[in-house]
Each structure stands twice: as structure tokens, then as C-alpha cells.
Image (cartoon, rainbow, N blue to C red; front, side):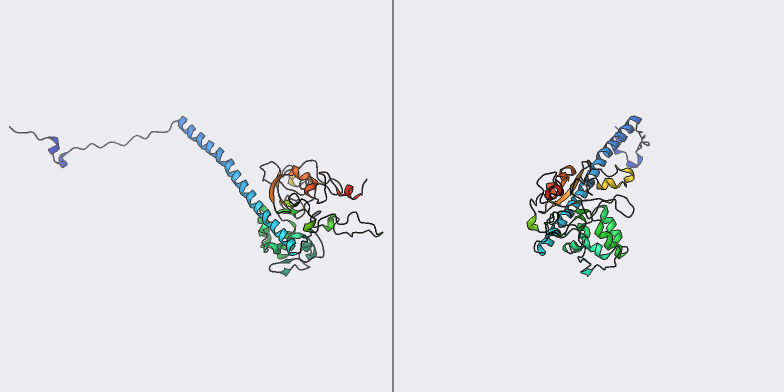
Length: 321
């Protein structure tokens, strides 16, 4: 009996192979597209604020590190000078730049004026690395100055560091009644003589006394707000100097209202506190902190001789009853 060959014995060449036709592509429905778009929007909504916070934190960290370096340079100067504090503004002093080269008298704006301000006199204690004074947007301006006219670099470099100094009460400021004689022509004690600290040994409460803080000004070439100025004004001197409220950047007309920068004596909150009006401070003991501008209205933070938050020199010296 003849056997019928099974299909498995059929030579491969004789097999019929069925091939599947092209697969149908399934399109997204409108609902699915809306879900995807919604998820992407959610991711962006989460990522953008997070990225902004990371940038803010990085900027704050850089500026706090720079303020710490500046405080170290300030202390090094005083140690090198036998305890004498660097004057904040005093004509007649000498300043140097670039490996000990004296600033020429005919420099842009006047060499003596440049040397009167503290930045170039403190620069040797930062190895002439002004990055400890210029950070953030001021670092960009400094870089532009470095590549421009050397005299303008010297002049504007002395004006706009990111941190201002408490020149009135720490070190002294000849434009704020500093360096006056100890006695009057009639031989009586001068009530405005030696009201500021000129030596480290005169600093009471060094952990609280402000030496540097983040600053701003509109005394600029174009009249706009710059985030840096060499001098800070205390809340009170002979009377109150600060406004009732701190004016944030952008709240003044066209960002050029001079009262904005001067509202709190050139003190700047910048973006550090995320809109909470906080500034970076460096105190006489070298500490660097982020503090609310409202807490800095206390005069005990500014003047070694202050014994109350509303202390002023006029009352303390007997200039007013």
C-alpha cells in the first residue's frame, strides 16, 4: 500500500509561505493627544520654577562666597596694619594695581579720588582678583571695563563693587564727617571726633557689626540701577536716613528713580530671598549671612557705640537735646 507523504516531508522549495500584509498604523485619538500635551505642560510647569530656584541658589552661593573672601581680605589688611581698619573713603592715600603699579594721578576721574575709595586699596589683599568684589551682573561690567580704557577701568572699578562698605562707622569716611580733629578750635572736645571705629580693638559686638553688604545704586553712567556701589549709608546718622519702606528693584518709575536705591542707603536685596527682601551681609568677625533688610534697621548693627536700635550720633554726642 502506497504511503502518502506528510507535509513535513515536502521539500522546502515546494512549500507555500504566506506573508503578512503591511500592518495598519493606529493614529492617536484627540483625547490621547490632549493627555500627552497636558503631561508635557505639567513637566514644564514643574521644571521651570525648579530651574529658576537652582539658578537663584547658585547666584546666592557665589555671592556669599565672594563676600566671605572680601571679609577675609578686610581682616588681613587690618592684621597687616597692626589692627588698623582700612578707611572707607579718605583722600591723600595711595593705591596700587597690577603688581604694585601706583594708580596715576591723571587717571580717569582723578587718581586721588580713585585711591580715596577702599576697593583698590584692599585689592592687594585679594591678589588683585576683583572677582571677590565683583560678582553677578557686576562681574560682566568689570570684564567690559578690563577690555576697555585702562583709566576708566580704574575709576569705575573703584565705584561699583557688588558689596558696599559701612564706611561711616567702620574705618571712617571723610565725606561723612570722618577724620575730623578730636578737639574744636576753642579747645573743647569735638562731638564728631572719633565716633567711628578705626581699629579692630574698638569693635564691640563684632558678630553683629556690618562691614559689607550687597549694594546697588543709580549713580551710574546711564542712570539705570546697578547692583553694586562702594558705600552703604547707615539707617541713621545725625537723624534717620532710610525711608519707611525698602523699594525693590522695578517698583520705581522706569527703574531710575534715585529714591529706590537710596530707600535703604544703597542696600540691595537683589534676588537672593526670592522676593523676601533679603541682603547678604559680612560682619566684623568674618561671618556671612542672608538677612532681611528690615532687621538691618537696628543701629546696633552699624555703629560700635550704638546702644539702641534707633540710636543716632546727634543725640549721642549732645548735638541735640
